[in-house]
Length: 230
Image (cartoon, rainbow, N blue to C red; front, side, top):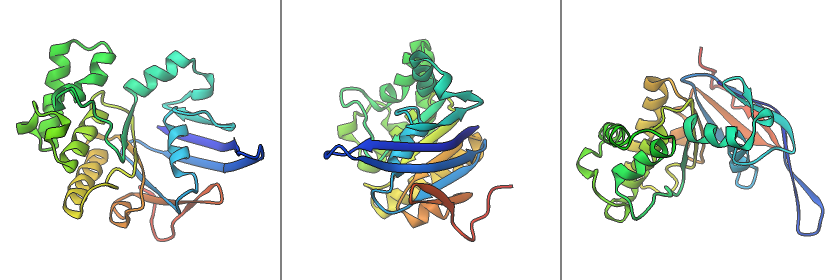
């Protein structure tokens, strides 16, 4: 479903010297598989997620989604892939404050050209699934942090994506709301057969994954004792 081959990412520092963040990253994620990526701060986990999500381009190497190489895709192709095939959940939900929960979730569908009535119906179904049926017409400022993050998850699922990428999705939540979000994420990968890649420092969330990988010295290393999904 999602494949990274030999990814390398180099930035130029303030002194003009190269800074190699990712050296040789290789990753395969299958349909319905939940992969957690852990590691120290500053090791490049978010950079890797941006490359996997076509938000940035590698210095070298290749990313393929459903067999299609990002490097062989036009900017328009990549924009369509980000809208229809990839769902994003970030530590900060990035909801549009002037729109209701239902309108926020419907937005990717409207951008994709889905009729408004169908988009709003799909948004309502997803919000009900994540336990927010009574909060459809609430704006982000009227929702708790945990509720806002569940809206963000519903939005990520709106277009029935092939893969969902999540960067510290429970980083700003208390324990109770974190556990509820973790339940939803793990269930989503299993029930919807969506590939799920999460960057996290949360050990409880990582423990739910089918595989746990550590990003260290620019490479992904399997965590011993955590087996790949059969």
